[in-house]
Structures are given as structure tokens and as C-alpha cells.
Amino acid sequence: MNVVNRIVMLLLSIGAVIFGAIGLLLLGGVITPAQVSPGGVLRDQWAFFAGLQGDSATTAAIVCAVIAVVGLVFLVLELLPGKREPAGYLVKRDDLGQVTVARKSISDLVRHEAATVDGVREVQPEVQGTSRGLRILARASLFPEVDAAAVGQTLQERIQQAVQRHVGLPVTEVQVATQIATLDGARPRRRVQ
Image 1 (cartoon, rainbow, N blue to C red):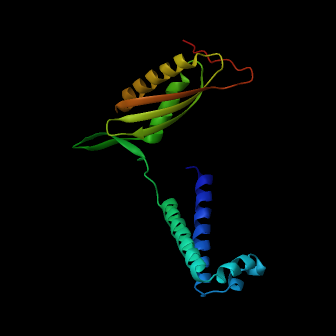
Image 2: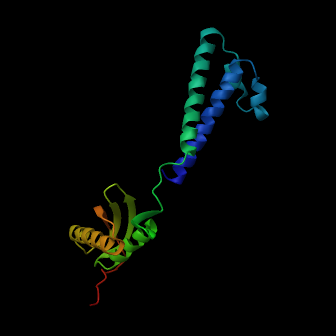
Image 3: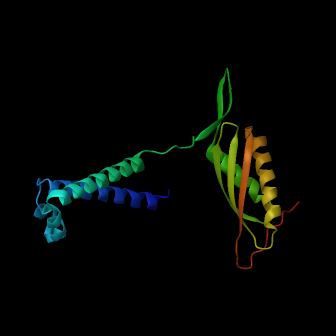
């Protein structure tokens, strides 16, 4: 999830916990509507909760408890760190120690290799480690005049070969998602040989 979505989920979770807790406290008579209504805001709504009796109060208490628990669960899930990719990948381990390569270095290598392919404007790679090797997802922005399928296939082959040659790790999958960039009069770059 992106940052905005996470912030929205955090705020909604906190709001649910607060609403559920206030509702339960009002129904139990622990607090009064005036105590949770600064400046009289929402005083009538809180007074409605505080005035419930019998089955209505029981139902409202169950609903408030469920809302508070669900909000708490989502709050905890949002605050826990998710599964993160390692910062680097192990290339070799022997008696002298180990050799690792940073994930950012692999991304930089993919960008560098993509820049050598005619018609590629920009590439945004994402590198993931699997038990069998690396999985590379590359979003490529192409110039309008190029054949997207041909350039995509060339990118797949070049990226796989470059990473395996320079880094020494197997590349099990290279996915390339292309989009044609609309550029004001820009032409595809031609390599000088």
C-alpha cells in the first residue's frame, strides 16, 4: 500500500477504536455525553447512546465492541512491519566469507542495460528474490515510434543476460510492462556504434 492509503487506514482504525470505546463507556454510564462533546459537538448523538435501554442498549454495546475490536485489529496490522525484501542478495559464500550484492545495484544495472536498447525512454525495475533466483519486474516507457512487443522482448533478454553475467545470480523471470510515452516531438534514441 502506498503512504496515503496507509495514513487513511490508520486514521479510520483509530477513529473506529475511539468511537467503539466511547460508545461502550456511554452505554455503561462511565462517562456522560458532555464529557466527550467539546464545545457541544456531537452532544445529541452521544446523548442518544447514553439514553438507550434494554435490548437496544445490548445491541448497541455489541456493535460498539465489534467496531472497536475491528479498528484495533486494523490498527495493529497497519503498524506491524510487513514482509520486506532483503537489502541485498547472497552471491557467494566460502571459507573467506561471503559476497552480497545490493538490490539497488541490481536495479541500477537493469536501468543501465535498458538505456542501451533503442526506443526505451525510461525503466523502473523492481527486484524480488525467490528460492530459485531473481524475479525482475520492469515498467518501461517507450518512444511512440517503436514496436513495443519487439522492444519488450529485447529488454527481457538483455536484462536477464546482464544480471546473470554481472551479478552471477540466476534470473528466473523477467516481466516487462511497456507503455508508449507521448513525448513532444522526441525521437527514439539511436545507438552510435
